[in-house]
Length: 385
Image (cartoon, rainbow, N blue to C red; front, side, top):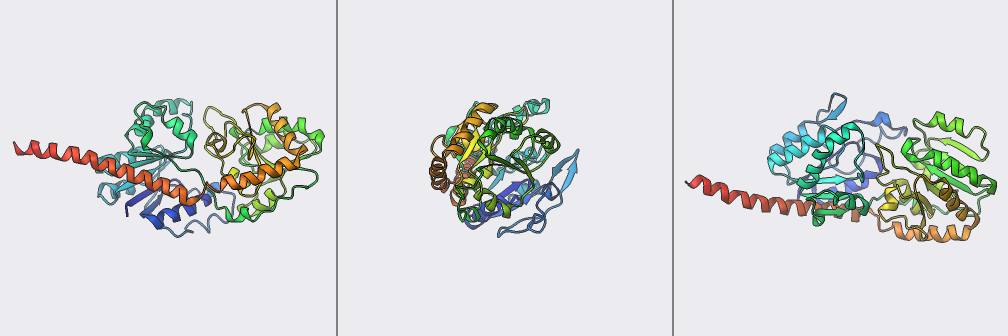
């Protein structure tokens, strides 16, 4: 059983069962280097902070130039405590710290990658060579989906055999109990997400203006920096409801009322939707998804156009409106797609996700052992003279 250090930013609710699955299959310690509870609207998050049947290790956290860091993890790697360490690219200080400590201690390093574009800010342009060096130097890469694997393989020197795909999973139980109300009148189009630029809200509202004569309603669940803009934009637009925040426990009931879930995300200079786990939640609920091709769950193969949902080009309100009208006018099509969605999303589960991580860990450990084997005889030979 491999000894693993799993280093992540913050334990979100949809990762708990992944951590538990890994803890059952490996001797794993979990380190969360940023206490970000204040960023969550759900009042249950603080109470659930230590929730979960996995071994969480608490070490001192610090802020350096506004960046979260937990330097004690590096010390544990340097002491040879682990066979492998898993780390995502988040944390401007933590990523180079952990990667450097892994290299220095000859601990197998596994990169958990969710990016499928390099952000185009000045700072990111500077950091791109370092990141690509880590892509090449990592013993293995775990990718959110096939789209992430394709992105990783664009970096010269990254071998395809070291990239493992761990399709994103959610806790399906609350959503599998949903029985969609297909004949709800008026039909409801649902958006769930942050009100941020990359979520594509302007395109969704522009598309809804074309759809509104059909009588369908649009419910917008969430909040964020664009909340004031959204209130002003829909103030004179009938049929749109700004619902605000809904807890995770309330989402199954919201999805049960929806004819479809719409994810209108766009690519910006800083963001492209890595996956969109609400897509999984909708599909487990039997609700078809309309997604743009800038949504990871569509690019990664979960949302299949014409089978379990509809995929449209990003930044195309007309195509988005046509897709919504298609499901609004044809509830039987929505039903068929929703049933296919339930079948297809079943493959995106925590056991398979955890196994991809463990396959990557074993690959990285084996590669690490081969490198050590090559290094050790040379060192001994040099010392004999």
